Image (cartoon, rainbow, N blue to C red; front, side):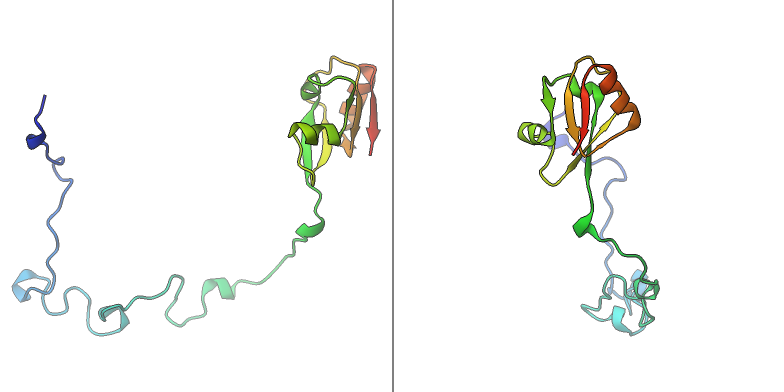
Amino acid sequence: MSLLSELAPNKGATHKKKRVGRGDGSNWGGTAGKGHKGQKARSGGKVRRGFEGGQTPLIRRMPKIGFKNTDFKNNYAIINLQQLNKFDGEVSPQTLTEMGLLSKSDKLKILANGKLEKSLTVKAHKFSEAAKKEIEKAGGTAEVI
């Protein structure tokens, strides 16, 4: 067990600070590794992110294409048949919203993943063909809203 006073960083984990501008004998004298003059040689001389030396930046050279109209986009929340086994009677977007499985802005789509073991009345905005067949095979009804 080592003492607290014997703790030291791993070998090679620490480095001596580069002492720039301490004369020509230090190998970092004169310009201190900053070259000769220019913006980046000055104090506080930084160039902003994305700056390409006055050349038109890449982001401005790229063509502006496409348009996404997200105001009228339909987001479908997907529910599988195996998830419907938890419910009794009727399943609708309102019941799923009350349970917190669906947000008010989402529409509901039922997919045929899994096996339906109950007779349910399912109301949704969309059904896959296979899901509709499975619901009717189980003795339920699939209503499109």
